[in-house]
Image 1 (cartoon, rainbow, N blue to C red):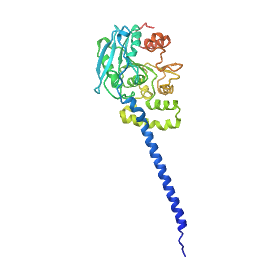
Image 2 (cartoon, helix red, strand yellow):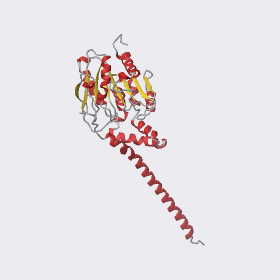
Image 3 (cartoon, rainbow, N blue to C red):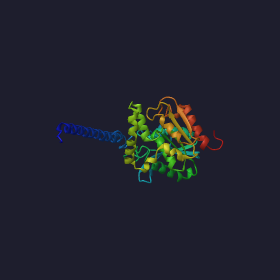
Image 4 (cartoon, helix red, strand yellow):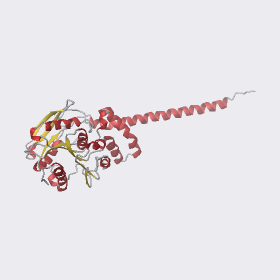
Length: 325
């Protein structure tokens, strides 16, 4: 004869309900956690990239006793780009200077233009889109600026005075990223000098989280969400435009990578990641300390003999006229 067991059934029902509540709580925590991971990249990045950078200080040719011609160039995707040309007679080559994400103005490279003019190199300093007098209201982090450099290259190739001359891209920080990425996609670029470039934006994002004391695990799981946001912002195709990938497209073209050991803006790990994918001929200059701009006197590179000697030696060995040293 069967008997009812309401107490036993009540215990089973209670256990079942507890399991369901625990599962629901776990799912809620997972969804909330996933939402937080998705929200962090746009929350941190949006204020820094959804903007046009208007520089508080812009230098002029008169500051360096240089004759500077202002240019307005059109990119293939319809953006007007501002640039500054320092021309010379019978140059060995043309240097394209590129600045960083927020500062300084690319005109801070005029000191470099002056020194390299004395060594036989013309130069064009370019304001990337969303910087200075260039159009645009979104900073591309190196993913979208290749057309800006292509516009400068096309201008150079169209000038008789620059006919058949080598073109070298020379950038710092995000500008170093754009220099490598541009050379990887534009075969007319003959060489690269890159200062303090990050290997990819998600790499430097996570590296800086670790530098601020965030647990490495959290940074690691955040990385794909940074990439997801960048993909949403710049497009899937643009995700190939990272130095640790594009460096492999440079083949045997001369490359000089420069970084400081204790860089607090782009940690030294980025240099290793880029070099790991580079050809053996790529040259590396490492400076002790925290020198994001590498030179101890970026505005006046002649005051940093070690830095200047490295730059001039690299250029003259690879692009100088026969007999130059």
